Every structure is written in C-alpha cells, then in structure tokens.
Image (cartoon, rainbow, N blue to C red; front, side):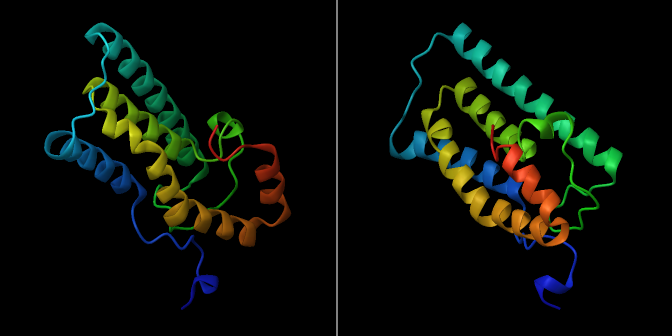
Length: 158
C-alpha cells in the first residue's frame, strides 16, 4: 500500500525525538567540544526559561485539548478527521512543534547552554523536512481548497 492509499501523513520518525536529540547534542557539545555559556544572571535565566516553558506548555495544552475534542491522534502518521482552525490553531498551523521549540529554548536558557538554543532553528528545519511537508501534502490531498485557504490565512510557525 503506498502513501496515497492510506489515510495519514507520510511521517516516519516521531518529531519529539528530534527536540530531545537536540537537547542531548547541545549538552554534549557544551561539555565536550566548546562551551557556549549564556552570560545571564541566574534570576534573569530563571525568568526567561520559565516564560518560554509556560508559553510552550500553554500552546501544547491548547493543541492537545483541541485534538481530544475533534478526535485527532497525536501521531502525525494517523488519519486527520478535520482541519482545526480554532484556539491556538488561529495563530500557528503547528502549535505542538512551536511549543516543543519553546521548551527546548527554555531548557537551554535554564541550563545557560547556548548550544541548545542555537540548535533550535536547525531543529525546525529538520521538523519541516521530516514531518510538516508530509503533513501539509496529506492535508492538501485530503481537504483540498479548505486546507489551502487555512494555509493562506495562518502562518506555519507564528
């Protein structure tokens, strides 16, 4: 059965593992290659890390809530019953990926590890390549013009 015969995006690798891998890579680069320390007062780091983490968790909770209400599966390779365009999905088409990036940044700030933060843009490129482009192609096939209109009206990230 090829991808056009099944109902789901052609995502083959769990996206959260990319974020986890980036945090681990950042810790290893910092410890064994070249420290990239954030020179911020601990109180500033705590405030910034907390703010990024809370924003990330709020986005994630909003997306989870809407997934549950609409019968969506968190696994991106499973069928999508409908386009969600309310709640956090009015501001970003990918609130879960944005939330995980914010959590990655929060960890980097909290640990004063610049590598973890510096890897965030690379992670978003990887997430686009392994997940988002497949998800968007699937949603375009399944929902056609309705998804294309949503895409025109809501940004991919923020």
